[in-house]
Length: 322
Image (cartoon, rainbow, N blue to C red; front, side, top):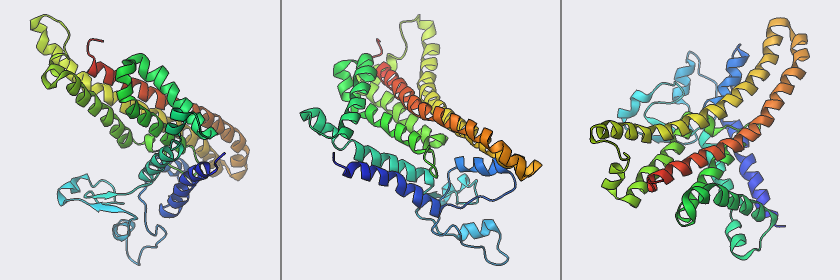
């Protein structure tokens, strides 16, 4: 077996964890629940997060002068987005979420680098066979049954990318020291926009720009057509909105439960003393591990559900008669 790709995959996972741990600011405070739940928020990557404020300088002033690892300056008109003292509203700042999105994309390239050759020739290592099997399952059990072989072949690369990109982001969030990009609603919103763009763009390309909008409404009496057209147009937006909320809620909800169980240890230690905290730790830790096992299943399930619904939505736009 070629060990280069597994080693590169491990590096693609470990490197962002190591880099993020040294470039995010650690939280301090008295409330253990707030401290633990803060790890679900996107954290900006600082060049030196341990830099101390100057004498007489508030933390907000200090953070305004700290250097980011990567930042894109936007026009001043974007400053109304400024709702967080850690970055200005007219800046795009790299956070730990982008770091693990890049890691998920790198895993896609590394783990699937030998799959195409294996499918064409039947030759390849065990890693290629495993992921070729996953790709064949998604093709034969998810895409083709809905879209058919001819249409499905054209859309298969899109849905393969969506599924495995979401899957890798979900699974990376279970690695200690990492961040779950799909637990952020802006990330899931971006994924939903991809599906929405495929629905509109591919539907108009397949049916024609005017026929797509005309075919939104089934055969109804003429008096009902305007009302049904509005309902169908709203439905176009509701479908990707549901994808966004479903993935975000499931991924963030599981982490909230795990962190809440862990927070109970520190809460009992604060309220009743270290002895009670130590005594409660086996129970809290056991429940947290149990939820983490469920989270592993949820990570795969939510990638499947997002992809399955995207297939259905895009297919209904391309072939409205179905």
